[in-house]
Length: 256
Ligand SMILES: NC(=O)c1ccc[n+]([C@@H]2O[C@H](COP(=O)([O-])OP(=O)(O)OC[C@H]3O[C@@H](n4cnc5c(N)ncnc54)[C@H](O)[C@@H]3O)[C@@H](O)[C@H]2O)c1
Image 1 (cartoon, rainbow, N blue to C red):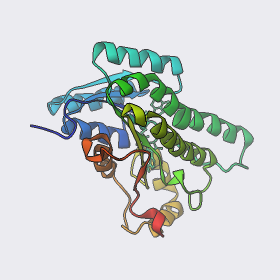
Image 2 (image 1 turned 180 degrees about the vertical axis):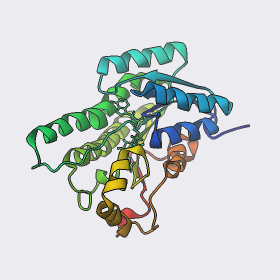
Image 3 (image 1 turned 30 degrees about the vertical axis):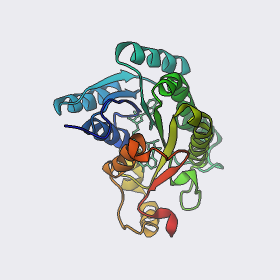
């Protein structure tokens, strides 16, 4: 069987759950070997088992993306034990909703944690793997958001909005710098995708969900699988002349 990603080694951060899990499984079906890096090792190992059971190749390692030294050590281990990484998906992320003017301790903690994981984490992991990606003429796929552009209708999340604007800026900056090495760098901007990240909002904040739906022409929330096609496209030769871009997979959210 031949797949669009045969011969690739793909590292997926946050692949134990939600969007990262779906991308890891989707890449494996297209022939990539998968490394899942997540601070939830049990969840990552369960996804690896599913991939192996389907006849794929996969490994899991525990990683906190905020730990720069651990990122470097792991990149070395992956190269030594498994091979050179040719696809990096920077997907690990968190969200919390507190207004900037809410409790000062909460807001400060949100800022440190969200910027630390969603933005500095992307820097840490990319920096650790960049030599392998340059050696393989690799591809980087960063997970942005509608909040890479908007703050209207996405209230009480200044740190998350800032982190996802930052992810888009980082995507463009790296695309500009790494193009000469044959490395392509792009992002995906998911809309409201049903994952544990927003379980609480979906259960307890119907007004917020309704606001999302009122601005989603396709009239439904997304599933993690809705992100897999764009992720395969950006990692494969089908997008050979695409770099520095973002594919929105948001049901049309930004059109209305
Ligand atoms: N679900 C959505 O509606 C939505 C929309 C836009 C963007 N996103 C983005 O998609 C990405 C994936 O989110 P999801 O919805 O699948 O959430 P999720 O909670 O299902 O998965 C996030 C994964 O990241 C891992 N993770 C969290 N902190 C980590 C850390 N410090 N180090 C390593 N791993 C860590 C978690 O263990 C988990 O496996 C995030 O970047 C998120 O911001 C999600």
